[in-house]
Amino acid sequence: MWLQKIPFIFKLLFYVIVFLFLSLFIIVALSLMFEPETEEISGWVYTVGFVLSLVISVAGGINIENNGLHRIREQAVAMKSNIKVIGGRIENILLQLDPVVERQMKHEEEVYLKVSRNDSKKYRHLRSLGEVKASLSAYPTLRSDETVMKLFSQIVKEYEDLAQAKMAYNAYAAQYNSGVKSFPVCLLGSVKKEPLLDYYEDPTDEQII
Image (tube, rainbow, N blue to C red; front, side, top):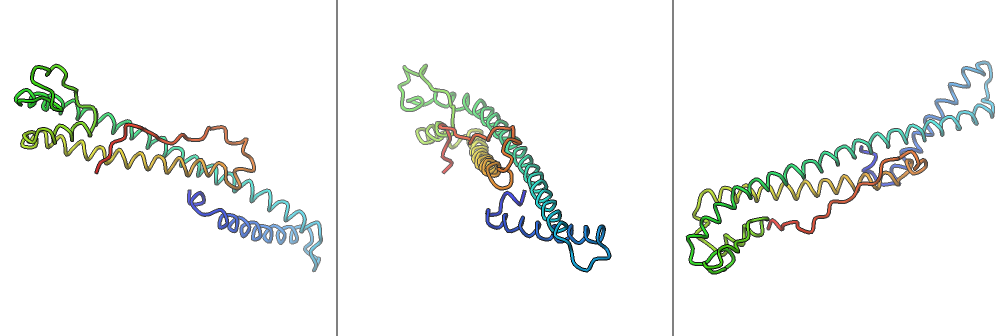
């Protein structure tokens, strides 16, 4: 995976160094095998050595890159699964918090978001952290309820974890997508049958701060 993180110029330099050392090794090996009595290495040995080194370097590089990209993709998929799990926990907390807040509203002269008591049936059930914050702001008495504040702390923590998970997923997606298009994987782009990863975009994302 570390190869996907380094800049292209350093990655190219790495492959050039590998190619040169591998060429030297293959040329020496061929010379010892086929021309042990000759002091000078024949031209065909150089040619075969460079060709074999090039093929091995490219094939090995592509294999290493593909394996690294596969691991990155697996981590991205796992992170996207974590996002769904965290989202489920948030929904569960909202389900616990909603009846508590609604019960408090019934004891207020005004109900949620300054709707009159006669219009209490219009109470909008909590669906996000923003609505929880709005209810706490509109009704300070809610902040004295230990259950409400405990659930509020939990949901804030879950939203923080959710934001971090989304950023981590998008980082993996960016790394994977750029890796698929980079050298040497791009030389055999047809090998990659899996589609690029979509970035996580949610217009309903909450601002934690």
